[in-house]
Image 1 (cartoon, rainbow, N blue to C red):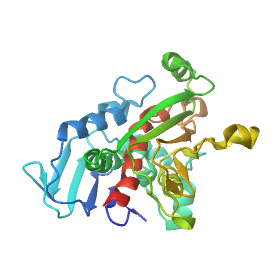
Image 2: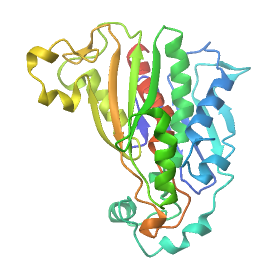
Image 3: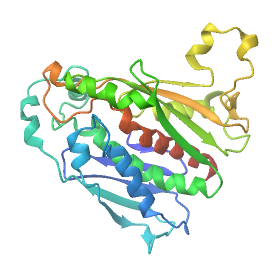
Amino acid sequence: MNVFGEKWTFTSFGESHGAAIGGVLDGVPSGLHIDFDMIREELARRAGKGIVGASTRAQHEPDKIEWLSGVLDGVTLGTPIAFIIRNKDARPEDYEYLKHTYRVGHADKVYEIKYGIRDYRGGGRASARETAARVVAGSIAKQELAAKGIRIHAELIQVGAETDPAKFPDTIAAYQKDGDSIGGIIECRINGLPAGTGEPIFDKLQAHLAFAMMSINACKGFEYGTGFSGVTQPGSAINHISGGIAGGISDGTDIVFRCVFKPTPSTPKAGIKGRHDACVATRAVPVVEAMTALVLVNYSA
């Protein structure tokens, strides 16, 4: 499926090295004043401009949004919002060698098994290029949530074994110099979400957040509250730590969760050509925020 949400629905389309990527947002209320500068800033964060180890393709794509419908003079009409981002720095010829081979650690083989055909040009739909459309959609959702006092902030808290943010650039640079890659952990905090958000049993708030996070390229794990570290602690020491959610419902305190992102398997050291990130987690921060916003806006719609 390429559709996310039930009230605020986001449909994503396009391939990494095709003509464009884009999306359609339906269910957005009328009268929302769109801050286009904020959306451009979010796309720049995702592109990793100025970030050590970010792919050259991401840094050179202009990511200019063409708004096709649903917005007039910067104000939403209440009708479907459609937009595209043309791929200006696509180089499908760089991936000709993949026509008859599969990259280890990628979705190449399973896509061909499932569909009987695959877009070998940089991974097609499985490429992280697709997340630019998520950031656009999520930025609009963040603006709607901000008007209701709900704030979302994510940050990179670990790169490999390193937990000092000041040392992240050097850590990533070392792996890049070696032709390799490294993973990272992103922590996200939600502030201002009213108590009572979420449902028990199958529609727990954390279940929807986990579903959204695990849909992001290279995300391999999700935890909230004490998470996996809680297994080593006695209940008496951690029973007060909720992570902002109890029984699948928000308790009014800040919600805190973390996502782990694997190292990209596409590296020169592995003999794989292309323009790849030394640490994909650096550029995933705004994507985590965007997907969080798309989860929450469906509760507040």
